[in-house]
Structure formats: C-alpha cells, structure tokens
Picture 1 (cartoon, rainbow, N blue to C red):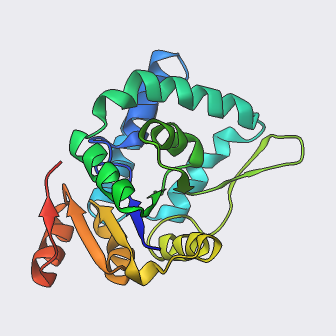
Picture 2: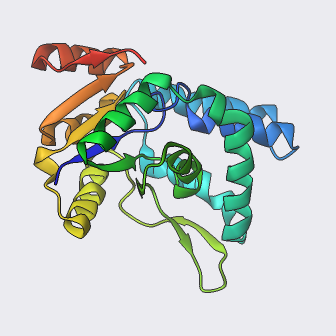
Length: 216
C-alpha cells in the first residue's frame, strides 16, 4: 500500500488556517485586533522559517485550559463552514481524487490541531488526520498543553511514521504535498515530494532538487 499525504494550510486550502480562525474569533467577539496582529506575526515567522514552534504552540494552547473539548470541536465545525470552505483548492480536490482512484491511503498531515483539520478531512473524504494533539484531561477539558511531538518539522516525520506503522504503508514510498520550507524534512523522506504554492525558500530547495512545483 502507498499513501498520499497532504499538508493543509496553503496546500489543500489557499490560506493560513490560524489567520482565518482569529478572524472568526473576532467576528464572534472572542478576539481583539491585538490578537489578530499577533497571529499575523506568527504566520510571517512561519513563512520565513524563523518560528519557534514549541513556544508559539504553548502560547496558543494556554487560553484553552479548562475549555471542554466538545466546545472547540463544534466551534471549528462552524468556523470551517463559514471561513475555510470557500478557500479549499479545486486542484487539491482533484489530487485527492486521483490518489483515491489509485487506492492510496489518504491523510492530512498538518501542524494545526485535529479540531481545525478534521472538518476539511470530512469534506474531502480523507479518512486520516495527523496533527498537533492537544492534551485533554479525564473530564474532557483541555489542559492548555500540546502532546509532544508537535506535528512540525521532524515531528511530522515521527507522527507520520506512527500512521504508517498502524496502517501498513511505507513512508519512504509515499507522496507528500506541501507549501512550506518547514516541511522539508518530510519532503526529503518520501518517494514523491510535490511542492504546492511554495514559499521562497522551499521553491529554491525544490528547484535545486528537481522536485515538481505546482500552483493550486
């Protein structure tokens, strides 16, 4: 069995989900302009490959402490319908269907949380999600912490290998679609790296390696 793995932000969707989520929070009165600017700053750092992912994740998770898991899941369903679905890439849909027709295992592999990525997976009929997991206590409340490793950089490889072990595919024989230089470690592991809407650093790296570059 082979697998087709898809990044989410600026790959299957054209935008950064974090920015879209804070816009949603502002619309429902849960975020300020300062919150918006902070997320834009983080996204810029991410794009430039300069982000301290564990530090940013810790700051992002802390406000969730004590929030019921079911509340965030329902909120993300509403957010996806209103703010994300219009940005789903048509060419991304076609790529998913191409791999489905081949019989490949399909998975989203993203640094976002499962709550942010599962609505997209359901919409596209992708059965597996590999994401950055938030810790939940025995009462169903978030603790305000992520479970290591984050699904970021080499952490994506570790979490993708867990999926491979569980479902019987070889990561080194897989396809991975991504836009970000931060995903270079996983792109270098798979057999078929495909670069989508790349940032400048990834475009240079892909060109040097002769990887296909597509604009979705």
